[in-house]
Length: 495
Ligand code: CO
Image (cartoon, rainbow, N blue to C red; front, side, top):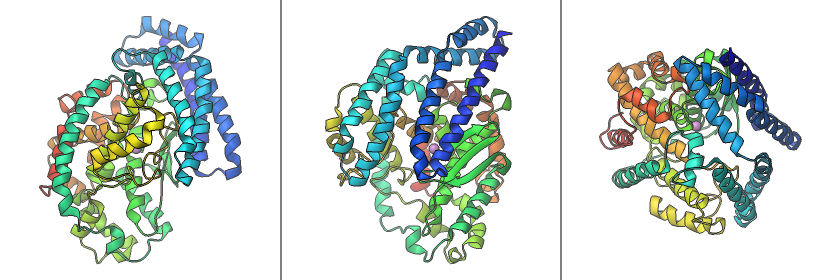
């Protein structure tokens, strides 16, 4: 009965994590400003408690007993994953974990201030402390080739830094050629705010976004759509996933694409079989795989001309000023490829360059090949190397993302890997369904969701991402599909 007992213990921990998720969601959406400080303390206390449960003698014993007994594939995977997590947590000294939580709370605050004042020196010392702790954590966990492997494995289990570097090499070479070919043709293209006057009322935008995600298969009885400064998805509990978007009165597409992105995350979360919920096997295959599902709906579907055919009559109904704008013009406004400073608002081609820049810098920081003191200068050099533009200030440069201040090292590659997985998945989907363009222009999204469910969602975290991508596509992970998709879309006029 010990597999059963192990599951019971894991579900107990999952319930506490559910409470944490709800507190975090509230912190990012509705909390009154004066409540933030106490909330941060509550969250710190609870995460310490969860850490103690995850490293308890009892859990160790349950894993040991379940190991003897697990027979079917799901239970074997459950024990393997739980054991891996348990052993990893056990290696991190408790004091170090607590110190990390405290230091990152400080660094996040200083990051906000540094960004506001556009002054990197405000964050420098605190960020150095974070890097120091991250190195200690990575060394406690252990690695074979590269210290960064210990951090990368948390987000992309099974992927090694050496393999990631190979992927980046291929991506860089191909993306720079692509960018050189596409950009001159895009110089004259106009953004939505330039071709469309007037405001898009926020209540109309919200109604539209809700309708859109419902059309994609987001069940309003199992989730909510709210507003936050940085859109996110938070899985609160069984059949309860919260997504957010942000609104711009001058440009409805900001809210639309963010809603599509987060809806992709939510569909993945809700599509994982109920029997796996709350267990380590009941998660997405990796951070990158999760991101692939978000990017798939946001870009591969949402920014395609066929999706616009479907959505245009609905858009015209909600926002009558769009009636006079043609499909081609609207498609162009949503798909301008241009070198820019900010990652989150960059296009499908340059986005990956933004990620590679960050990956190279954080790998150097973690391996002691770059100091935090020299980080802004290194950022500037990489910006020129990858994007061919000079850094102009800290705010739109090294201070634009909160990740490093939050101690999130090893995560950035997941964004790029998400695009790569999505590219490979997209080609297989097209092959399997035959007439994807027609399906999308008719809005028959359940045909796509069912395919994704069968090929991806139904497996939860049973397989590591490299194994899953092989099972889906019949091939090893390859960035060539993403490049091919971008080439088709921007140079051959397909998609
Ligand atoms: Co995402």
